[in-house]
Image (cartoon, rainbow, N blue to C red; front, side):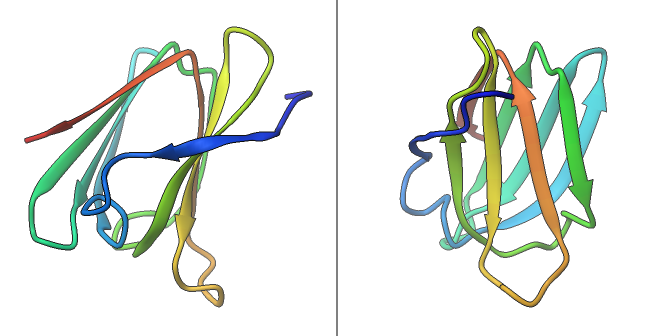
Length: 102
């Protein structure tokens, strides 16, 4: 992706400081379930997914979900790990996304 400039943080405060429960991929879509700091469950649905890069994302404690620019119509989403010493990561390049409470 040629443009990787930061755009914004995604999701409400409770979503951040949460942990990734599951990551599911199917037919150009990715669904990520996150337990927020309060215990609420959030679901992030990505569609028009071009690429997913991940290493052991389940259980990862989130600092934030950051959105970066990309080649139109794609955007890059990075689930930022709180633990700098951990190798866990999750990054999704997708056209669209939605965050909802489960």
